[in-house]
Structures are given as C-alpha cells and as structure tokens.
Length: 333
Image 1 (cartoon, helix red, strand yellow):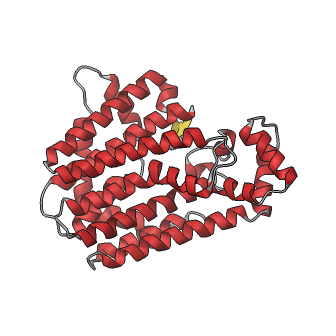
Image 2: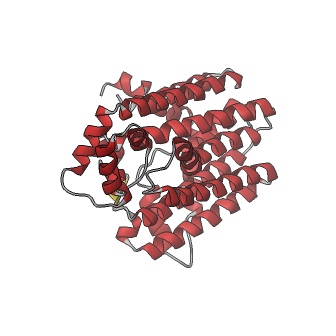
C-alpha cells in the first residue's frame, strides 16, 4: 500500500488529526485500568486494550468536541469512559457468544475464564462511570448512562430474537441501535454536549453517530458472509454457526420459498447444521439478492450519516467524518 493511499484512509486521517489527544486518552486508559488489589484486572484489560482495536469510539468523542472548538479537559475523560464501556461490552459479549476469537486473537474468556471476563467487564463499567463523574456534567452522565442501558437492552433483545426466524428488519435495527449504534451516537453527542454546542449541533452529531453505527454493524454482518478472516478478525460464517439473525438472513427468509424456509428452519431455528450448510446459505443469500440488498441498506445509512453533518460546524474535521461514513461501507468492495 503506497504512502499516499494510506494517508487518504479516513480512519488514518482522523487518527493523525487527533493524535495528541489520543495519546492522552491512552495514557488515562492505562492509568485507570490499573488495580492495586487485583492484578488480573489489568492483565485481562490489557489483552483487549492493547490488541490494536481501532479506538473509533473514543476518536468520535474527540472529533465531536474539536468540531465544536472545545477548550477544556473533559473530552479526554469522556473518550476513555467510552472506550471502557466498549471494552466491557466486548468482554461480556465474548462470554455470551462463547467466542474463541476477537480482533484476530484468542478471547479473554478463552485465555482466562468466563468468570474473569464477566467481573473485569463489571469493573470497567464502574471505571467508566467514575470517569464520567469526573467531568462534573450531569448531561454527559445522562447520555452515557442511557447508552449503557440501551446497549444491555440490545444484547438481551438479540438473545431473545436469536434463532427466531420470524425476526423482522425493524427488530434487527433495534438490536443494532442497542448493541452498536448507541455507543457511537453517545460518543458523538457527548463530545458536543461537553463543548456547550447548541442543541441543533448536538442533534446533528447524535444522528451522525446513530446512522454511522448502523451502517458499521450492517457491514460487519455482511462481511461475516463474505469477508476474509483477516479483514474481520473473526471467522467467516461465525454468525451463521452462532445462529444469529442478521440482516442478510432476515432478507433471505422474507423471500424464501418452501425449500429455503425449511433450510433456515433447520440450520438457524433448530441449529441442526451439517457440512456444506454455510456454502448453501451463501448460495441462497446471493441468489435471493439478500447480500446486495443489505449492502444497499448500509450505503443508505452511511448517506444519512453524511446528511446529518450538514448542521455541524464547517471545519476540515467535518469532511473527514463525512469520508469516514463512506469508508465504513467501502470495506464491502
């Protein structure tokens, strides 16, 4: 990859733009994940935090506050809080999903055990609330507390919708709003609120984060049926094996004939999966145009994210955030 191409990637441009602040966020994360009494806490946390995640969510906090000319220190606390919430949900998710791989490495629950993953996740949630409280802003506390509740709700909804092949696209979007978009929109909204931006700008950045998060998750779900293991850091077909009803499958079920419906009933609802079933599923998804339709949805959500930015201050950073929405869906090409 040539130097020029690398610089042009919006995520890299965002990283470069926010590098100074991000260094401070990372230092704060390392400082706050320490525990004098329980050395396992920093061990488990470091495994995830140092795994080279993109740090997208804390960057969104920093970007939103900078877009609004924020001059204080609270954005650093908030960015760290958001990353802690994210890491806590990952630790809990991997236990719930019984996953063996995260970001291309063995999951914490595999390296230690489920108990450690759950308890360290709890610790990080608590840490995130301490960081929020340090900002002294009730409004910011409210935004991130609401997001934390929405995330938990989305996960529980996913649990009850899982394996239910009657799940609708509306329910899917509700789940995605919970488990992914809620933290994106909380990050962008909190960044504007701490800056004292006017309500229209707060709403614009909330809408941007919400739509970006939904696009991001749809892309993730699509890559599960067509990405390479290197791009997604988990195994292709994991969602199928875990019997998750993601958008491509929901669309395929809606268009299914009797034979296909019986196939989804057996593999997803009953969990009776045999050799060759993943290939058969992929074949149906392609034939029914479900992958292409889900891709079009992702692109439409990215378009909504970009449109929302029209009400945000016109700064170079705004253009990077707009490009970021395109970049999220470009992972599909």
